[in-house]
Amino acid sequence: MFTEINKFFISNIAPTHTVFHCGNKQISFGEFSHDVAHMANVFSQINFNTVILFIPDNIYLFYTYFMALMQAGKDVVLPAMLTEKSIDTLYDTTNVIVTNQKVKFKNFNIVDTTKNFGDDWNFCDMDARKLYFFTSGSTGTPKKICKTFHNLAAEVAQHNKMQSVNFDLNPVMVASIAPYHMYGLLWRFLIPLAGGVAIDTDMIFTPEELQNAQQKYNKIMFATTPSFLDSITKYQNQYKFQDNCIGIFSSGSLLETQTSKAALENFGVSPFEIFGSTETGGVAWRQQKNGAEWTVFDGVNTSLDENRCIIADSEFCCIRPYIMSDVVEMQNDRQFLLKGRADRIVKIAEERISLPEYEDKLNSHKFVERSYVSTVTQNNRVVIGCVLTLNDMGKKFIISNGRHAFVQDIKNWLADFFPNIALPRKIRIVNIIPMNTQGKILKSEIIEILRSGVAEPIAQNLIKTDKVLSADLVFLGDSAYFKGHFDGYPILPGVIQLHFVMKFIRLFFNTTPESYDILKLKFSSLILPDTPVHFELNKLSDNEFTFNYENGDIKYSAGKIVIKE
Image (tube, rainbow, N blue to C red):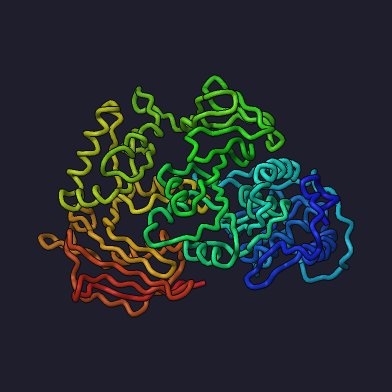
């Protein structure tokens, strides 16, 4: 099938060679070729050159339809979601949708994929075909980016050359990333397919599922994100992984040093990190066991502009050359250190403040596990706001001494490095810094946290599995929700208890309920300020959870959440 398409697919894959593992079913290269040919005939009947492809729940079907659309000469739009709110942004590109979802949108045509126009197809070159990706939308406004299939093909060839030794060991590629963004399309589809590596189509959502994949296959390679690796690090004492993972690949954001180190300890391999963007493709790589420096990929040329931002030029780029927003410090012609993004240099009054440097100082504080710093408007002026996660020492300090003493300690620390005008006006303590599935900080949620007055409880002894979340919580007495409820005898409002149930479902189980019912709700005892409370959240199914707040024999509240479709 692919021997006539693009040079990187010339691998003479035997028709009987297994290319996909779909649950307990194996799909051969010959079967995949047949399915692509069948659907290419169907899609060749479409009268429009550009088509939206949205298959969110069947990855093999996504791969088949994607290749068939390319073969049928169609340019493909790959949105991360398809909703009444998002669909209008696609109308200026096309109004034709290929999907397996039962959806209807005004002014959009859904392609009937059930028709049969034959199974014979002369496979052709796809280099000129266009793909429309969307950035992760961390600011809330995804950006549409057009690339050619040739851009991806060139990058696949580069990665396959680097990974050929691993590919020769006959691993199976497993992944916690979706294929609708460029990193996912490359690493969980095109790169392994071109390298003759079998692909597991199941999405890895939890460490338990990764353990199951390791038990299922002799050797695996794992395409993932910093946020997933962070979750393994955070709960690493709960999991033991086999030593059959021969490669871990990460992109989307920088991997913390401690996370990279923990991955090396857990799996025996240092994650292969890829630095780049949708516009540039891969620019450089590193494995932190060798140091913090990034090495430029072969075939990529780099230079610096007047602001020391990197300029990348390669066949991977959709715009040549492309000026990135990342400030670097060159170590030699092919290696550099990242110094942060140029758009994260801000002015507070007349002072220029580097937010990455601000985070570095915060992260070196004895109480801080991780931080993210942003500007926020307060009383018509721009101020610094910090969102922090705490280590065990920090949690014990704030519980024993209160929020005011903690905030003052943080400000005293920062005063040694920054002028008074740049000290933070807002400091928020959270249990998880919000990130999307690609591991990128959700800046819009950061701003929401900084503007919110609903302080998260301090969580200790947190244990998370694929079915259960448990933690010992302390709702600090100086939290705003205790004020006025009631005067002289503050108690934790029931609505706040339910608020954090829903928040923990979203944070720890990647579920964002828009509509739900609360059943069997019972409030039995009052939760007072600074009282230790054990919290447990149980996932019964994808749309059913039970929760309870208790302390030994004391039952505070319990209930069941049923999420509506």
